[in-house]
Length: 346
Ligand SMILES: Nc1ncnc2c1ncn2[C@@H]1O[C@H](COP(=O)(O)OP(=O)(O)OP(=O)(O)O)[C@@H](O)[C@H]1O
Ligand SMILES: [Mg+2]
Image 1 (cartoon, rainbow, N blue to C red):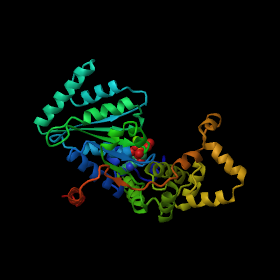
Image 2 (cartoon, protein in one colour):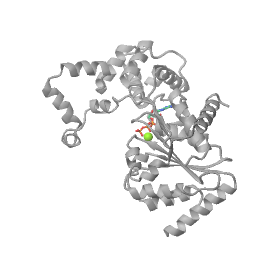
Image 3 (cartoon, helix red, strand yellow):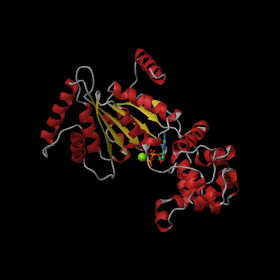
Image 4 (cartoon, rainbow, N blue to C red):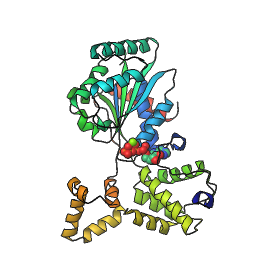
C-alpha cells in the first residue's frame, strides 16, 4: 500500500508541475488574470506580471494562453531558459511563433517579414500576443531595444503586437536598461501570495481533483500550512505532499498540526513568529552566521540548507498595480468600469 491508496487518492494531488488541470482560480490569480486579459484585449503593447518565487506565475501564463480564443488571437508562450540568448534568436522565435515558417537569417528581411505578418493578422482582425515566461532572464540592452522596435509597430487604432512578461520583480531593473521601453509598460501587476482562505480552498481543490472524498487535513493543519508556506503555492505543495507521506507512515487518516510541525522542521522551514523570536535571542555570532549563509560565495563552499530556501520566501508579496503612463481621468474610469465588468464575468 502507498499513501495514495491510504488516503483514497487517484493521483498525486500536490505535484510540483504547473499542470493546468489542477489550476485553482484563487482571488489573487483571478485578479491578475482579469487585468492581463484586459491588457491584451485592448492591445496595450507591454504588460508585466511580477511575483516572488513559486507564487504561480508560470501556472498563470499557461492558464492565460489557454484562455485566449483562437479566433481572436494569434498567441504564443515563450519560455526563456537561459540568460545567454541573443536578440536575433529571440526575434526569430517570435517570428516562428507568429506563423512565419521560414524566418530569414538576415535581420532586415526578418523584420520586414514580421511586419508583413503582423499587418496580415491585423487585416484578419486578429491580435498578436506573445507571453514570455522567465522574462527576468532577458538581460541585455540590445534585447530591450528589439522589444521597443516591435512595440513601435502600430496601426491607426492599436499596436500590432502585445507582449506580456512574466517573471521575478528584477524584470523591472532589466527594463530600465532601455528607459523608453520601461516607459511603454502599460500595466504592471504583482501576484500576491495566497491569503488564508485561498490556501485552504487551494488545498481542498487539489485534493478534490485527485479524487479525495474525505477530510484529510484538520483545520489546525491547514492553519499551520498557511503559516509555514506564507501562502506561496509551491511551498504549500512541498509541505502538503510531505505531510501526506508522513501521515501515511504514522497511519493518521486525519493529518493534524503536529504532523505539519514535524514535516516543516524536517524541511528546515520555520514560520515568521518563531524566526523573529529566534533572531531576538540569537547571539551576534549566530546572526553573522545567517548573513554568511546567504552570501553566494559562502554558498559555494557550504551548500545552502533548506532554511535558506525558506528565507528566500520570507518576503510576503504585496499587490501593487501601476499604470506606467499617467492616464487621463476618463481613461482611468473607463478601465475601471471594464475591469469591473470582467470581474463580474460580463
Ligand atoms: N493557481 C494555481 N492553481 C494550481 N496550482 C498552482 C497555482 N499557482 C501555483 N500553483 C502550483 O504551485 C507551484 C509553483 O507554481 P509556478 O511554477 O507557476 O510558480 P512560479 O511563480 O512560476 O515559480 P518560479 O518563480 O520558480 O518560476 C506549481 O506546482 C503549481 O502547480
Ligand atoms: Mg515559473
